[in-house]
Length: 101
Image 1 (cartoon, rainbow, N blue to C red):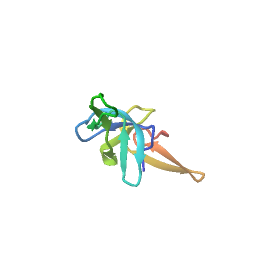
Image 2 (cartoon, rainbow, N blue to C red):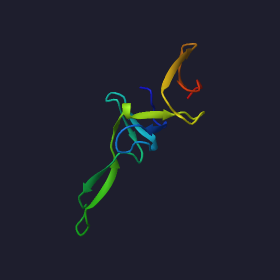
Image 3 (cartoon, rainbow, N blue to C red):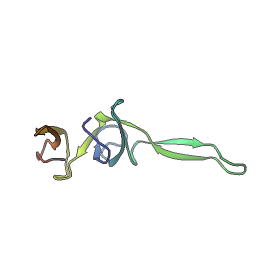
């Protein structure tokens, strides 16, 4: 997977198109990511104790990996991710500025 936990990403499709956020969790088997503050869904929560009221909370839902682009920390642009191999070490690079991410 070309994105990792902690990467800043730009949303390129869907209701949150154009917004940016940080990846909180990546799910490589499903090719999905969880971005903080993006793709919020409402969840109705039951009251835990007597006399307490139920509430509606917003929780982030997963996004498909094809709907995000990594923001390069060096050039600050949304870019695709490439790889280089130096001495049997695989490194991620920015396709625009060719710097290591």
